[in-house]
Each structure stands twice: as C-alpha cells, then as structure tokens.
Image (tube, rainbow, N blue to C red):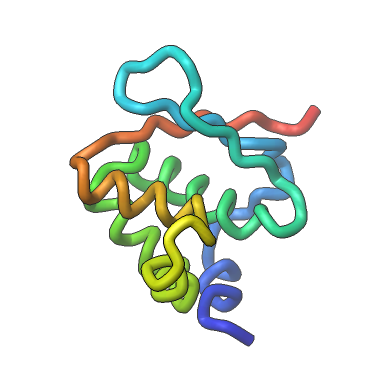
Length: 107
C-alpha cells in the first residue's frame, strides 16, 4: 500500500460529502469543484481535511497537503499538469494565495 493510501486512513470521513467548492480569496465565483467520485476521492479527502482543520488552504496548510499526497507530490513536480489538485497547492504556496473550501453534503 502506498503512503498516500495510509495517510487517507487518518483523515476525516468524506462519505457524506458530495463535493467541495473552492474559492480564491474573496471571489464569489468558484475556481474549482472537487467531486467525491472514484479517482478523485483522495484529493477531496485531503482538501476537506485542510478546510476543516485549517479554515481553508493557505500556503502553510498547502504544504501539509503536499505531505499528505506523499509519493504523488514528487510525481506532480516531475510531471506538471498530471495532478491538477496537487498543482493547485503548489500555486497557493508559490503565489501566496488563500482558498476557501465549502463542503456540499449529500442529501
């Protein structure tokens, strides 16, 4: 099992989360939506954790997110564009951004 998969076991449950909506700073329009579906649930879990535990995604919490993505972070660095949700965390750090995270719960 990968380190990323191990890290996911320690994050809050996302079973009742349909999606996350990300907003940059004070923008009223979403910059991204992460859906809770196969192949994306791990990223949603990391972003949800960062939003809940850190009140959003700042450069400091983005660094924690990169640690949680573990082996995928190195692959994202080597292959820009292959992991857009990790690339977004690099962007937050490099450009000193803040992302607000809004969880949409399942009905």
